[in-house]
Length: 145
Image (cartoon, rainbow, N blue to C red; front, side):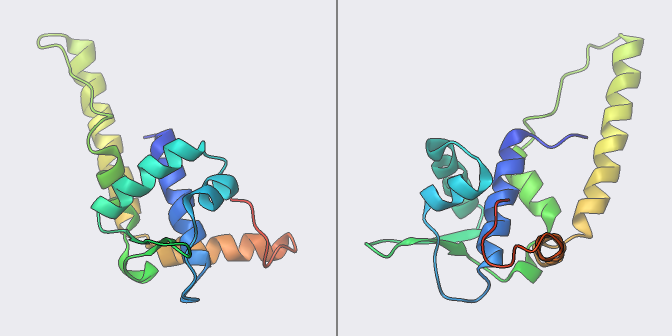
């Protein structure tokens, strides 16, 4: 089960926000787009979806931006994928088509296995892995996700 580009960008945005930790600082959509390599308008849409899903909160005003709505330890990656993808990857299987039915079952099994792995992973654990990788590259404050 491959992640969609939208999911990839959403995870990158969440990681960037989590890397800020509890600093009280918010990040603007443009900054999140820059570190994730996401087109600016698309990042704004992703952040709206993440806000609707309860993953991020927004602050208005000149110092406004986005921050995590809840601690990274409380965000399961399976929740993020389920919310962002919202079933857009499901494909219809033609009835009576043996190949289609078998292939559909295999895709369903793969999605189930991936879901179990993602359900066991929190944003906090993912961020810790990113921090370790950044530290190994000597990049502790400036990062490109």
